[in-house]
Image 1 (cartoon, rainbow, N blue to C red):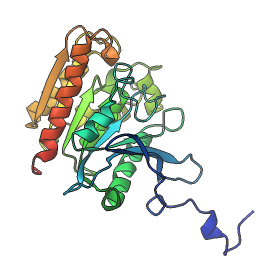
Image 2 (tube, rainbow, N blue to C red; image 1 turned 45 degrees about the vertical axis):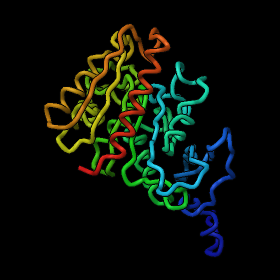
Image 3 (spheres, one colour; image 1 turned 90 degrees about the horizontal axis):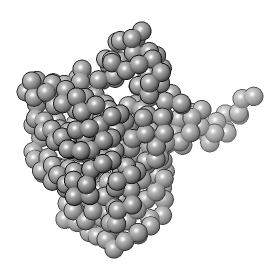
Length: 290
């Protein structure tokens, strides 16, 4: 059944660049929160949404932007979830970033049960494009965001930062996979790729941040638990080494006694992970483009 020509424009997916923003919540003083903002609507697929944490005050210049990418083995996860050690912190990481003068966008993306790679990377690229389009309305500086991700989200943040689709000021990764070529046939990496990395090494390499290290990369801060039993610390070490060898800026912090998700690390060590990430974010956001 085909719609009449008069109805066809109204039945097409709406353009998120033109949709009104949802009403804002104010979870705490000085913070404006927009939840579930559509940034991409595809025909035949669920709408993709992001949350926006914004300063609720007039600023002399647009707020620099942090784009946080959630983890969950590319298979699950909630946008805006910083992981179990920071999930219940008060104030939350996003409130702390806003109080430090930033805006924060937390996009969702298609998971491996919905679509194979490069689907999530395409989604995050679309999120950056939406943020650039709506930046004047939001009061944010979206031309050079800082990308920040944990676990699988760190992998996607790193891959996006190393893709010349859009300039970024820097990238923070927490315990992120960086080389998918060594994963097994039934691993989360294989589910992301839709294929066994051994039988499709080209796809595994294309999805590996390690393979895209270059002198054009933005500055990286790479934090990894020294005792990570899910994503070995060697993955973070390999990316840092490749970036430095290529002539890019990379700083690696190994967190002693920490497993994946900062489990086993002391509260003080987890706080230091966040504080050092915030300090790095402030530094690269204020730096001129390379």
